[in-house]
Amino acid sequence: MWKIEAEGLDCDYALLFPKKEADSLYTQLEEEVVYLTGDKTKIQVFGKVYNVPRKQATYGDAGLTYTYSGMSLQASPWTPTLEYIRDAVTKATGQTFNFVLINRYKDGHDHMGEHRDDERELDPLCPIASVSLGAARDFVFRHREARGKQCRRQINPVKLELAHGSLLLMNSPTNTLWYHSLPARKRVLTPRINLTFRRILQDGKK
DNA sequence: CAGCCAGCATATTT
DNA sequence: CAAATATGCTGGCT
Image 1 (cartoon, rainbow, N blue to C red):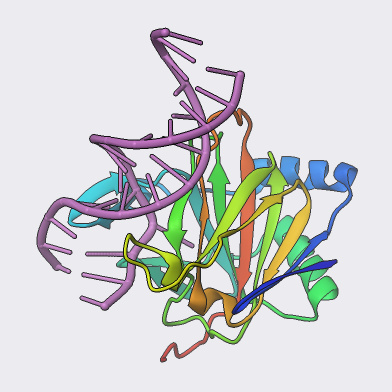
Image 2 (image 1 turned 120 degrees about the vertical axis):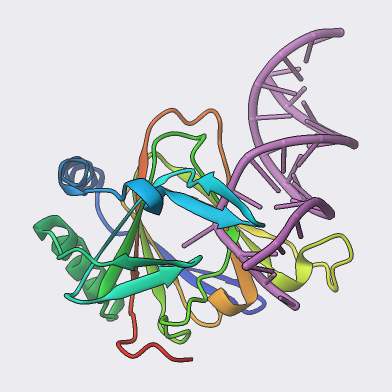
């Protein structure tokens, strides 16, 4: 397990699963996970509607709802594989989670834009655990004050590669001060499944 | 070289 | 004010 640190950024990175186990978890998830369809695959940004450039699914404890970008997503009940991964993350980090957002990037064209995980129902003090399975992908952090043409400060972005079977733990206050993204990588031809384990507050108020 | 790719600023309206 | 988007531009690499 090693530390990734910068001003206001605090992450831990580790290989959680050896290759063989990661392979079988990946295969099981490809069979088990049911991704969102219909309206839930659309997103509205700057007044325009787009198809989300990846597939998404939400699992978690009964009754939990996760809201972002104006849509409300209900958690499906945990599958055995997801429980297994969740418990492995808890064992490695000492943190407990009641929800997981799954993003599936079918190849290097699928991606995710710059954002922070600052939803209302997330406790900003709880870390978010990101498990990667499948194709390795680059991952980029940028400080919020180092964005835009006339940014206040010059702070270098932090880049890393998320490997098959890896765990990235994003600790407070990383998610408040830094944006992160999964840029497109046209040369990547195979899928990556990413699971971000979170703790959602029951009565989400911030 | 030409074509592709990556990085980054910007669009626009709720 | 800020946005889990795409696009257009620049500059670099193959």
